[in-house]
Length: 375
Image 1 (spheres, rainbow, N blue to C red):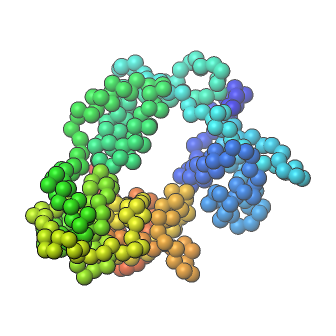
Image 2: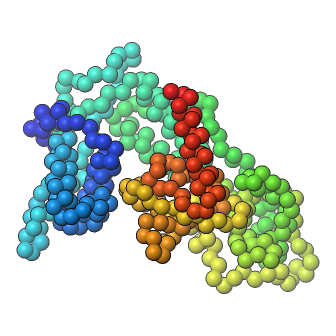
Image 3: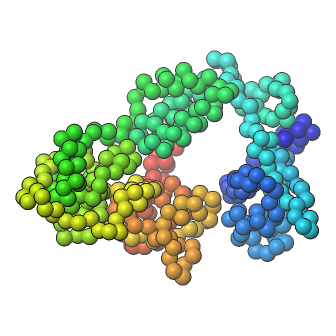
């Protein structure tokens, strides 16, 4: 655990740069993911930046420098002897790893570092929030919840619960919920649509409907063979294959209208669901760019800087033979996919097809222009 003897070093340590900070986060993630000390070679395999070190000597110097600097910031990385024969191993106990204490400044007061510390962790720094800063945090969490994504909402709620150990965020969060906010399209599918599609699924009968495809902003008549109903990203979807097409698409129920079922020969199924189709597998881990009824487009993405976030995101795609730094994504909503890639700030970029590369670059230029205008 952090000790008072580190206090002088903590005050003089400089903040790490972005690349070093990412490396430190990867080191912390690797150490905290193990309940036992891990050897240096194991740590190197789990930290992308260490994998890219040119040779053993370079890696050793990098790790020793990182370890000393993180210890100077109060991160209690332990060096122990482990294995047979004994060798140096490293451990970070979750119970000994603390974030700084947080407190709320008095209304109208300025943020300042308190003169007293809470025992027994006297080496831990304290972060002071002004009421306005805390209010902004609560508003940001409310905006995230309002987007309608249950996973993001859970992350926002978890963050507020953690802050609530030290800060009075509960009342502010309730006020933020009443503020003006971005609201996702939450119009529900009609009960009649649910009932009719359920009947069609049981009888294996084709359905016809008018569908508004938001990706291309078009409305046209569809005829499809329903395979199942799934709830994805706060919306209900019909997994179905259009007549004469083997591709299973997702049609959002609240964009369907004039839904009807083929009533001819009700005792005779119109189609058979393929033996290899599994609704649970079809619905598992669907990303925003995979949803919709547009044609599937294969997009090649290259990892330009294998940070922890970019490396993890790349795993959502499929490997590309002969190109270990590239992944192939099957995308229905190219605009959504381009915006997702832009969030990696150049660490993850599209390299094919040309239309996707152009779309990504235009989006990057437009984003930069907006930031420059607001500067």
